[in-house]
Image 1 (cartoon, rainbow, N blue to C red):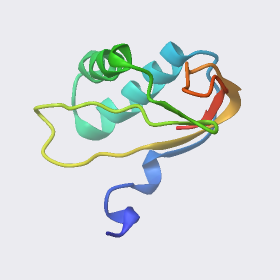
Image 2: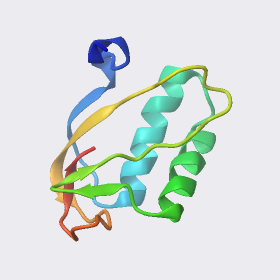
Image 3: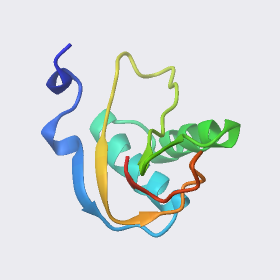
Image 4: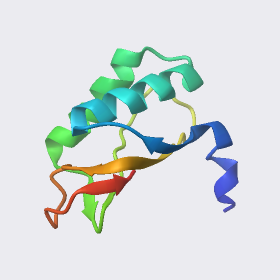
Length: 99
């Protein structure tokens, strides 16, 4: 599978400035909602609901926030490199800067 088939150039964010997990999820939801023509609050709530099940902070500075949305027909992916690492409650307790 070619990664470019589900990550558009506009969905790669470099130097994203956030200071918390909530702020990061808010920024991702805002960007995704515009790209998908969905309500921003719905996208945010989906990401937050998944985080409440357990952190998607995988370790080694990487987090993979995600969720299932019934109105979404396929895979949607964004990649963000944060300007500064943030606490993401990762499994290794290390801050995250790649999402």
